[in-house]
Image (cartoon, rainbow, N blue to C red; front, side):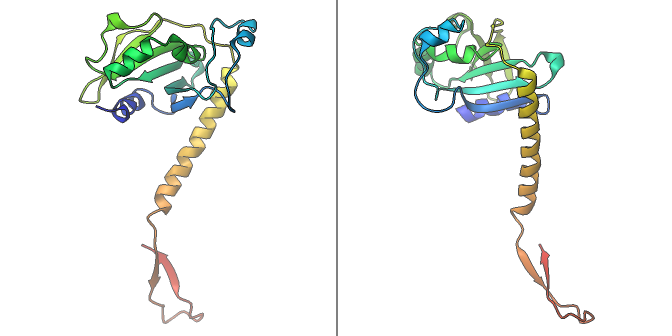
Length: 196
């Protein structure tokens, strides 16, 4: 099983229009890193530095107010060594936890045992069939406050537009012009260009 298989399982869990699932969401813009001293002065908990180019493997946003605009971060793991490395570096996941209601490791069944999870993390496993299941529920986090009503509305609108564009592009891509025989009854003598 590879990361694409796990991402596809996450897509099945987080379907539009209720959810927007973003792969490899970048946690900042620009280049460089954040000075955690300034970050802490603004009331945040974390220490150290992290790159604002850092990404979370998958990030889901629930676009319904009735569901509280839930935000879920997923770190996809397909190798044991990658999980052990991640477990030793809590700062890496801290940035994702600051913008999410909960944080999950998403991995093939049997790769991670629930008792191995770092504090504050949940575990979602994916079976060979593609079905996924939460083995360990992630605790509720206290993410950074943003106007998520606006963000959710904006993302949802952009996503809906993108869906329409994709549908149109799928219709237009395979089209090739075809010359259709001229209708002898047409006085203009033009060739009709049709679509196959």
